[in-house]
Length: 542
Ligand code: VG1
Ligand code: CO
Image 1: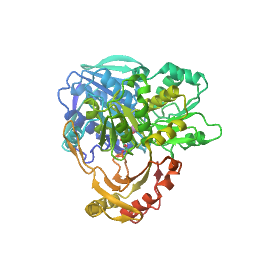
Image 2: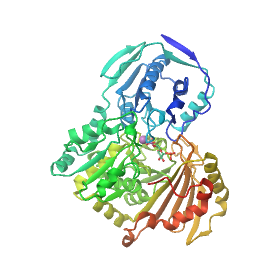
Image 3: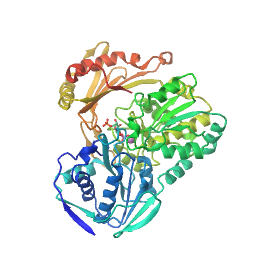
Image 4: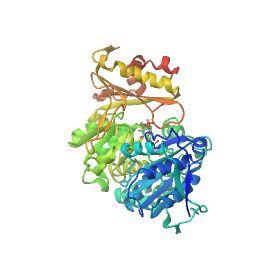
């Protein structure tokens, strides 16, 4: 039976870079999740009788919210829900399911790379029919609805059993519990040279994949171990746990330090990789060499034609603004389009739908292609494996040759986490206020060439996104970017992105922090980070 439950609006349901993210106890407030889900449905039109995909990364509170979402979908008039078994779907797998079964859209329950557990983070986001994150037009409408909501619709029924692959009727809606891995694995098999990669493993190629007790475990086991013949144990932390085993499922050099140490150690395997909470990020480490995500994007774009799915070449490349310009050099050489978008995957969807770009990436360990409309961690790992199998060279060799050919973009990001929000906003405001005066000024030996607050004009739907990050460009191609995170759940996170281009291959073996030392000093001088945030050093360097 459909029931209408009266509710009161919450004022803080504005989606961030990737959906609504809050601490679990915040989400557990009365009707909090229901309000947001109803606000999503109220921002959509003409979905009666259509299909909705629902799944999540298995974190704490996933199962409860999935039950709410399914019942609300039925009460709001959807005709069918496709839900992953056990409530599990990685973000890229959900994107694939939406596309493959021509669903109207999907609800993904995840706070991605944020920690999970009873007092950690939870999140909800909506994806549209192309399989990608809802554009700002829709997230703005969701937020507006959440501020005026007075009731939501649900079904007064018992919880649904999601543990077996099955299908049943719920009111006038069909619920299909589907295998979360099968369709995704089939797609990967179409894109990549599985026989070639299998052969490489059979010849003794060794790899370590850290699923970080998050959603990619079952996907990586099926694809790497079962289908590609990598030895059992190649995938570690392979069981998704509600609290990710107490770890922080962010594949970077801090939170995946064990993997890094292994790859730098005496008995290092050939290749190491990790993914995040919801499976859309990737960390790539070769034996003795970490590959920065910005370099990885450029190298994958330059070598994509080696994989069967991209043998005809790629149409264009897009990167988020803070991502290094390494990929730009590849686009230039390939004579294909290059697009620079604000942070967040939602800005790539239009470009991919219009056929302007095939490969997209972000400095935050996100790489993907138009095979889905989300970044895709395992996809990036498989493309790397395909490139390694086909070139027969090591990660180090491939990276060094890439730098020698295109030049090296030294790059790093300094994060200052959980700083006081007013202090962080004040820092950005102060930078904004002096932008006009910066060009021509000198900081140490560096001369500012240009400075602005990045704004994006979408070439397809002509929407405008302003205030997307402060850019300070120096003569010679170096750059510092300052922006505040839109995915955190406590205080503010200041991100400082630092980049320097070095064309001369005799200078390609410097330590990154050293190569960027003058820019790091300049960042402090420009933004007064220590005084404003009270921090002596970044919380995380990636
Ligand atoms: C961060 C990254 C951004 C990424 C977003 C979602 O956003 O910087 O590149 O798209 O997370 O990734 P922010 O606003 O905190 O800088 V995920 O894997 O958390 O969905
Ligand atoms: Co993620």
